[in-house]
Length: 495
Image (cartoon, rainbow, N blue to C red; front, side, top):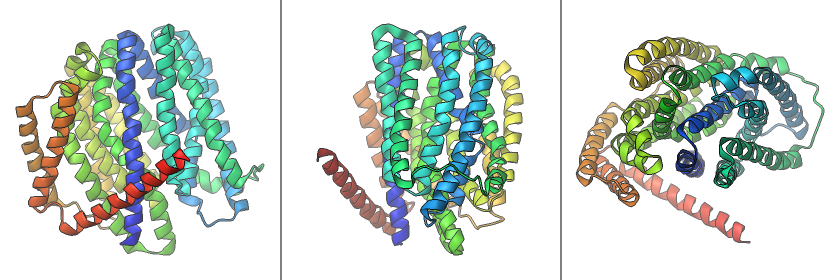
């Protein structure tokens, strides 16, 4: 039980950080939508999507490989060899990808960035820098340095907000926003590499075992490429067929719906290092317990959030953006949020497949999803606009969940908690009725209604037996540990 308490504590610290980090997009949304034109905001969306997804392909799956193979118990020399073998290869892959985008700058400016060549010319630099960022974050993830991981995640999020807001308010427009983003990337990379250098030093690697790492990492490229296709085809096709205004409508709704996927991030970050350690020790029962425990914890958070986002989508978007964007996209938030629930379940279950080094399975899943998504986007998007594209996203996430469940059950017995799900969904509908009666529209009213709704949800779920007494005691103990940890961090900052 103590091991799970430690795991939950790390989940909690990272979860709090993830929530705080996710707010940066909510802060940027009104800054950008009220300072830039809708077309310029569409350019920002296309830019940030690209620098998020493309580096995940350029790094050849190697940062993720480090998490699976680099044990914290290796010697300093072994850590140096593995890290710098992967690191130099990541640099090479990122440089090649940046060069391709540099040569395509004119085409990208014309077709993605509303003719803005300035933005297209700076895109390759952002891509290269994000490749290094992925590598450094996974170093801290590998050694479960969650406090440092959380700190840099927070810095990354709010340094962007500060610099982008400063330059946009100075009147530099979309070009200033891009420059602010790049400056924040440079500062972050330097700040992250300093503790890595202090810990392991520097070494020119021999690239030993690189073939083994590539055999694991390369099959994840189809997965990353498919994620790229899934993520960008929605908005790129909307931009091509419906215009950048509809990209803004869809992206604002996507921002809300994606909050559920963000909840999955702490599980995704922490599960594999812990599972890999248990696997190396032959503790299979620990793996089963940790996976099942993570599934229920995720659902306990994700289900009420799905109902909240669905019912509060319009008033939240009215506050964060403007009436045109709010009314143009609020109705697809429930669809995207539900897709986030299924994607989160996939993210946890797929760790079993990855633990068994069956990365080709996840690659094939997302290749099928990407092709299906492209075809359905063109078909349903043509007939139903952004509603059809949102339904397509939901369909592919459900498919990925079902297939990952099928393969995961071949290796481990998963608990799906059917009665818990029924009780949670019924309680969610009751919570929605209360919020409809309250009918909040002002920011404070929205926050208070959400707090009241969540309090009602968890109280009723507990009374229905969806949450056990021992789980409440466990969570209470966990919250006390989190409170103590936060107090220690605040005390150190004051010093």
